[in-house]
Structure formats: structure tokens, C-alpha cells
Length: 636
Image (cartoon, rainbow, N blue to C red; front, top):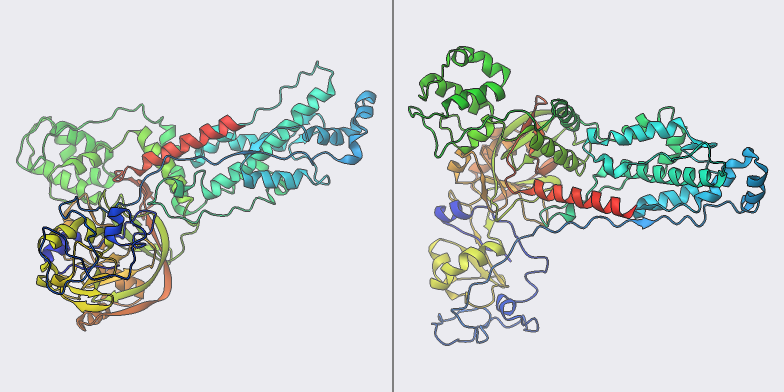
């Protein structure tokens, strides 16, 4: 069902709404049925029954109150929720078919004779006694490889582990360099006492090691390609098709590779963004994260030009540490001349404005909390490292190659970037969903630009925000120029029973200068009803914290973005708008769009920038990491 708002005031307050619904379909029965819990109520009745204590407009249409108290609390439509992460279940590898029946009966004779030429066959028999847990995909590959007696062992030669094993173990031990946890892939070399003459003890230890290392190598390859956690288990705001990772050839290629460690490491993403994150992670760890002195700036209120504060010294010190080399060169005289004054003087204001400008903040010299976070680094090295690790995990959820032409929205940065021919060609500020109406994290394809759009208010907005107004004044929509329909027939807002069913009611806002979607919207059809669009709320783009919408993405310069995705000019876009008519134009070629959430991400120059975790999502990823490592350690 669809609703729309008309007035500029309403557009400012509501703008684009996301159809945030609970998991169960909201339209399976009427609103009143939902409140009563009466799922058996028929959907065919649209004429209202009069309820005591409230007037009934003549000719009103809608659902029955069914005796419900009109003073009862208004219903609410809730959005997605965050989950307690459930780690992937591990299972025992079925080793029952690992033994070669031809050699099984000869094992006792071989062991007694001391004939080492048959050791691989003996070890294969002991391989069948190994106990290893793995996820279903890894277990299947292990069972297929070791179940075929023609496949030799990969990590064991004779009575010792081989160089391939040592190389693989070194790569796994270095998993932290690519944002993974080495604890997830640790394998202990078998402790074999040379003085112990029992070959059975040795072979059991070697074959247990063989199977464990293969399981860890396969898990590493799978994790580094698709990520070690399932994003869809974090929250309803995450929506990804988890990557399928081909593992069937990994063990054979590892056995044939002249440098197995390099082969395993090569499975990590190697895109420019991932490499930038990896390099930044190495740099921070080399500086030993978390132990460096952190500069603290404590302000009770915003500091404005002309004010005085003892924190000026820390402000200058912080910019001297976290400002770019260009900034520090341009303002070297100011930095060198500062002698501890508490005055927020014009030269310090100029320094702050330059810093705000390079950090994408409003360059007005007013030092608020956003500027303080930026100039103090916002984080210790340790917290930056955590953001990098989370970002590297999330990068694995997206395609390794983002494409030569794509649009990326980074919600914590409140920015959108258009890339073409492998280069960033356009960027602009955006407004994203507020904390109670969060924008989802997913990827899709841009298909259409719609000019002079109609706007339909989602169910969540009409129930959560409009019903109070409609119940007190059924003429509310008529006064603001809404187009209201019941079962496809135009009706007056005043004729709808806003206490009854809204299931068959649709309301939309016609194109206009104060339409909540502005002049255009850019569509990438998805189940979350999220798209990019214009807005009459231009003042929002001046704010540093721009999580203010109902979930869609508002563009500071929508005409430029429309021209970019259509492969045309801003002048042509202006002509499309000037018709005043609602119409849509398909993009010549679908363009990937990544509606992403990175609190650490490289800019166009490859420099990693850090952003506030506006929705607190990084914490949920960290909890998922912990749950995964705990489950893996407990089950192996």
C-alpha cells in the first residue's frame, strides 16, 4: 500500500520513506485485524461500522472498528532489528571412506616388518581415524579429496611434515595482515618424539595434522573470499547474496604449487580499495596500535571565532598531528608562531577552516563535536585498526572488482561517489536514514531516472506518523493536495475511515515544487524501497551529521548525478525536468550501485579516511567475529 505527502513542511519532515516492515507481511490482513489479532477477518468489507464515541463522516469508507476503543494506543510499524549472531555450525568430517581397502589388511604386516615403502598406505588407514570438524562446504571437499585413494597426502611426506605444510602454516599465521583472525586457522605441528619407536603413534599424529591443515587452508580460502561471517545474520538491514567459493581444486593446486603459501595468499582480494585498507592496517600495526598518546579536546559547547578557551592549545596540537602535509605547509607560520594563547584568533580560525575543508566538514571555523572528532583522529590506533578489520570483512561481501563504472554510497561518510573509467568523476554530500530509519547495506543496479516524480508514502510513515493527524482531522490530506484512492478509485481524504482498514488505500503526492522527492529520483529497484532522490530540504546538506531521512538517499546535486548515470549533460537533465511531466528514462546500461557502510574507506587518492559509526553496526560485526572464533575453537 502507498501513501503520499504534499506540503513543504511535511516533505522536510518525512522526505523519502523506506517501507520498513517486520518480517511478516504487513498487508496480510487489515490494520484493525492486526491490532485485534483477528487474522480470520475478511478483506472484502470496506464499509465501516459505526463505533460509539466518534463521529462518522458521511460516505466514509474503510474497515470496521470491530468494537475497538478509538482511544487505544496507535499502532506502530517496526523496522528491521539486529540479531544475536549465530555462528556457522561445524560438523565432523566423515572419514569412514578414507582408508584404502586394498591396503587395510596389510597394515599390521607392514608395521611389524618395518617396511617404510608402504607408509603412505598405512597413513591413509590412520587418516580414517582422524577427528576434524569443518563447515559443510569444507567437509564436502575433504571427503571428496581424501575419499579418492588416488590423491596423495598434501602436507606429509614419509614420516614428517613437508615444506608445503610449513609454507601454508606461515601464511595462515599471517592471517591478521588481511583482516582475518589467525586463531581461526591455527594448526599445531605434530609432536613426534624421535625416541618413540611406535610408528602407529607417529602416523596417527601425522594424518590428524594432514586433515586439520587441509580443513584450515580451505576455511581460510573461503573466508578471505566471502568473509568469515554471514552479513545477513547480523541484522535485517544487511542484504547480501553470500558468495559461493569454489574449493574443489584448492588441495590439488596446493599440492602442485611451487609456493603454496603464495598460492593461498593470492586468494585474498586484490582490488585497489582492499589493498589500501591492507596497507593502512600494516602501517598502524607497525606503529603499535593503541599505545600512542591521544590528543583530547574537551568542549562543553561549540567554539566560535572570537571566543576564548584553554582548549585552543590542544586544537592546534591536534591539527598539527592529524592535518595533511599540504595543510601544515600552507599554515606553517601559524603553527610555528602559536605560543599557547587561549584566544580563538583569526589565524587559528583560518587554520581550523582549512582543516574542516579537507575533511569534508562545513568550513565555517565553528568547532563542534564533528570537528573535534576529526581533529583528534576520532579514534586511537587500536580503534582505527578495528574499523579497518571490519571494513576488510565488509569489502569481501561486495564484488572483488567493483567495476570500471559504478556508484558508491558510503553512509557513515554521508557521501556518494560516481566512478567512470576506473576513476572518481563526481562526489557529493548525501542525507541517509536516521537511526530509527536506517538505510540498508546492499548492492544493486541503477536502471532508471524518473523526472518530476510522484511520491508514495510507505506504510511505516502513514502508520507511525500520519495516523494521529488523520484521526484528528480526516481532511488533512485533502487540504495538502494529496491524491487518495481506495481500491483504485479516487476519493476524498475526509471520506476514508482512518480508524479502519488502510489496506486498500493509496495516497500519493503529485509532482510539484515541494514534492518530497524534488525534481527527480534515481531508481535501482529493491525490496527495501530505497533510491536516490532530490529533496526540498536543502539546508540538511550543510550539516556534518546527515543521518536524517527515512532511509532513502537524498542528493545534494541530483541533476549532476542523473546526468552521470544517463551519460548525458546537466543541461539535458534540466530540459527533462522543465517539461513538468512525470516520465522515466532508462539508463543506457545498468550501473552497479553499492549502498555501503564503511567507517574506514580510502578516498580517490588512496588515503584511508575514518568515519563515525553512526548506526553502531561495527560493534555487531565485532560480536559476530567473537562468536565465530569461539564456535570454531570449541568445535575442533
